[in-house]
Amino acid sequence: MKDISKILPGNPNLHKKAPKKNFPLKAKKPTVKSSKIIRTFDTETVGLGGYVNAAALCFEDGAVDLFSCDEKGELGEFAIISDMVKAMFESNRKNVLWYAHNLAYDFRAIERALSKSDYAFHFSMRTDDKFWRVVIWKMEDGKVTKEFIELRDSMALFGGTLDEFAKSFQN
Image (cartoon, rainbow, N blue to C red):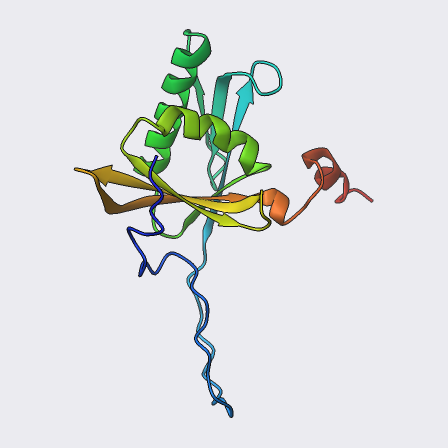
């Protein structure tokens, strides 16, 4: 796994600090950003913190891709995660955001499975030990390509459980 923050310092997909300006500032016309497509994913493990035994991708049209494997343990997890990430890249467009509730938990398995593969990761932190965003780039010949997927943590938007979130919509 490589830290790409030094490889791509000028990447427009990474957040940059706004430059300091002298006052008075001139107002700029507001720009309309393209809307994002929201998709979700989840992994299921054998016990808390165990190996992944199933994963799912949920698309905006209601379609669901399920991933599982007859292999158990590390080999099964690698096959499931590799297939899931491959499907995420194949169905990706630049305006897609992939959300997981508690991304840190799901990402542990992704990192284990992809750490020996040709991918690079960049983390956007919300606290010293919690991240709200991970960008995964494909690598070719040791260099980062333009292909990436963006994962986000829905817990940064709603800090409770998914059960609590669903109940918040009930009367």
